[in-house]
Image (cartoon, rainbow, N blue to C red):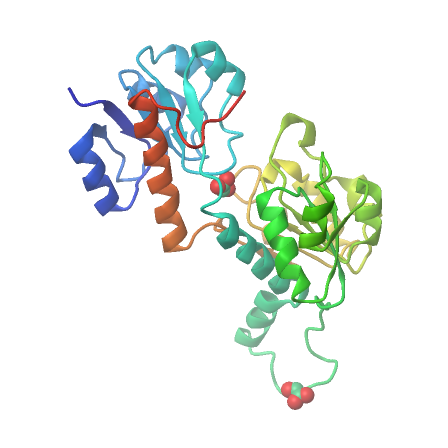
Length: 321
Ligand code: GLV
Ligand code: GLV
């Protein structure tokens, strides 16, 4: 008998068709946004589920799914999983690291450059008919990337990939992380370890790439923003909850910092009107990993994890509580 698998969100149709040959699949190709009750009902009689960061899997849902062996996340971040509840229910959890590292780092850099060089704002300015002549200074003036100081918060695989890119721009790279990298890895990434306050005070550009945990909820608030240089930029490709968005909107409004680039929002897909009203912020709809090649690789890996778990093997990306 084929295993029963829930695929909670729409995936590439050809990949779904292949999975349907191996399993009895309930899919959601209409991409309905399920609430907790919908998800619970859909998961109740499944052996496995493949979900995204948009689906919160907690004790309540796990308790209602007695057959469930594994839940496979199509994402590297897994703050949507209550890991203690997974342990208690003896259900495996997996994520999709590595396959998205370079694509996500590329986008982090794209957002950094768009933010510092006012790419989107300038385009809006041009489209609004403001470009009447070439002007030396009556034009959207911006901040340099090259030879500036980049502060990376969160030096995992993606943070390291960003540091490697920064070397090509002759940036002075500083990082803060819960644990320090080995001397060899620091050298290879060309990054210097500093404490959090130093990073906040000395960086020209700060990029957030750490995982979201209860400890770093609203880690970036008024106090941290006040410590930044008024000429500095802040880029968030980690998770929305890390930044106090109201404090950020106020800081941007008052020009306490130069600009921000944001790919992840606390209440996504809803974006605060306070942020939407600002010019000095570049907004993106959670797309750092969204190239077709990488999104396909993420789904393939999520399926591989899922099938390994169902076959009684250790999935390649098994998470620990
Ligand atoms: C996306 O945000 C991910 O965690 O992969
Ligand atoms: C600007 O376009 C220049 O030619 O300096």
